[in-house]
Length: 490
Image 1: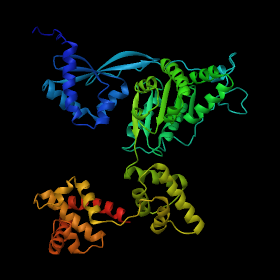
Image 2: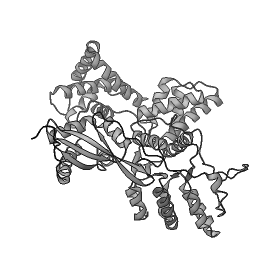
Image 3: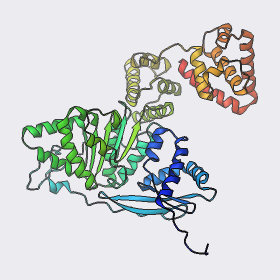
Image 4: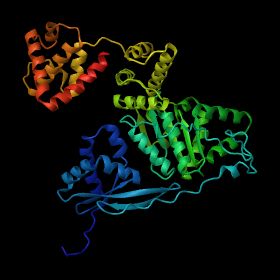
């Protein structure tokens, strides 16, 4: 090979084959939703020597991959292309519905400059247009007609606690608010169960857009209100005005779109609005109780457009997130609640954020009306009426399952006679916790482990106590699982 001459590129087919081999490995190392969200949209662009160029939808997409999957990508590329293998990224920037490629080489090259935002529509002047478009969201008392964004100023990103349950959707929402209509997440569709924070996130996006881009028109609207407005306009032969009004919005936040499934005519109208907004680089954010694939009754042409952007699930918050939400709620309300009460509520109220907030309000009301301090006993009484499944007697089987989950030990192995170190240790800890947190006799505890006698239980408990005194790491982990069991036993 002649020195200093460029190495010829391989055919696009070879790049595709190489990337498909990478995907086969990646698929075995991430969960299916992460794979679907972050790896399926990637396209192989070129393969030059040992450098594979892949095309990603946006700057944010690239940054997320580098932050969360750089190690996995690096190992996978080297496995497929050899020790010299590396990646280059080609980023697609969106501008008013048109995509412009921008290449990023890693490591070391500068980020491509984002495309300029499309011109916004000043609603003050649009509403005075000779068309006399009817505005369903007039702010009363204003000399000039302005749109009411229908936003609650208290629902922001600052008080939207991030956790594993909502990290993707929250992060995508922040990037959208920074560059509405100029990311690959258009539309952004957020889905999850009732009370998990979808409405808060939509409102937070709207408030952040208004803070960063005060000239942009933002509108939050529930699908129920959207449908009712359409019905009213239909009765008055003003459907065109209805469509034109929504086509003027820069950032449309539409909540609970699953309600569209029983309103086929409204779907037709929304299809026209969606197409116009998307083609003109306007941002659309949607929420639903179910993922798009489960929206039976939704027109396929709408579902296909929902798939253009990002689907982000918000699930029920985990324990740490619930605890953080409670602590923030306490600060906002100026309440002081003992730590043991916070832990108890966070552990037992598991369904959604609304139940958590309702519990805090109930605790405060009960303490104020009865002129009592908020303590664990009061919390138990409140939750007894608030959460049906919170109170059940802790069993040895419950503790066995908690220990297995914590130490990643198969449940069936715990009940065998194997002498593997990790199984023996988990078995001893389970016996120790069962003795500590249940009323079961030593004989009963032993019988839960393939007929062990009471002397085995005594020996196991003594072993655990001795290790706690001599092994710091062992002690820290045991205290952590003990706290989880203690919370469950409250």
